[in-house]
Picture 1 (spheres, rainbow, N blue to C red):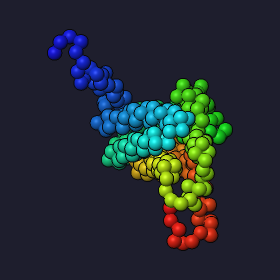
Picture 2 (picture 1 turned 120 degrees about the vertical axis):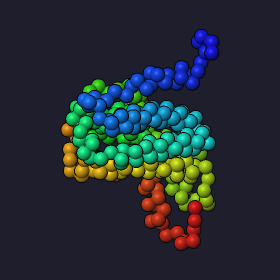
Picture 3 (picture 1 turned 180 degrees about the horizontal axis):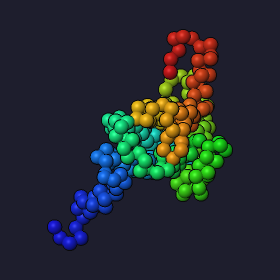
Picture 4 (picture 1 turned 30 degrees about the vertical axis):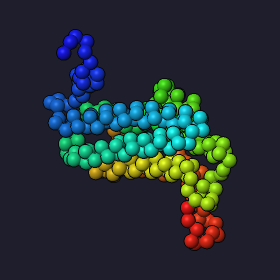
Length: 254
């Protein structure tokens, strides 16, 4: 190997990456490494998702429905990974977590600004939600950037208008077409997000109990449970409800 040659280790900065896991418990609890790695890995996947959301917004603004579908499908694949890795923390016994929990200080998953940026990019922008983020300090660049771009539901509606169709026509029209599959992919994204929230609730209740306060003074699983019903795409869900509210023939299919 010559000096300066790019290797697997140098390209991926493996030495630096593996030096970022620093348990705070003394002596270091053997389960704290797993806890750190899962959360650090989540942040890396959040970074990828935000990158893909940027590409998705660009595709929407270019009215490229094919790339929109591809981008959403990739985001859904990433969300499945983020959700699946939580299962590794199900092996963390409550008594083990209790032994290093006090070393977490005021840290809480609710402080993940990349996660908040994903929610904002997807469409959560009501005043109370944004105030909750601001209460934690100045908005980080990732959230500011997400706020500067249109929410996904608005972009999808614009894509429908550009195509000369309506949300209702996706379900009442002659049959599936490209934008129907885009709508389905967006619904899947919402479902993947809700599944992650639900699995997080179940994990928290399994490790610290359903009524125990979370780290950083949060409400723990009670707060997480309250977020499950949040919707990124209420108009898409309403479109489905409208379809079944029509007096269409029972044999009519999409």
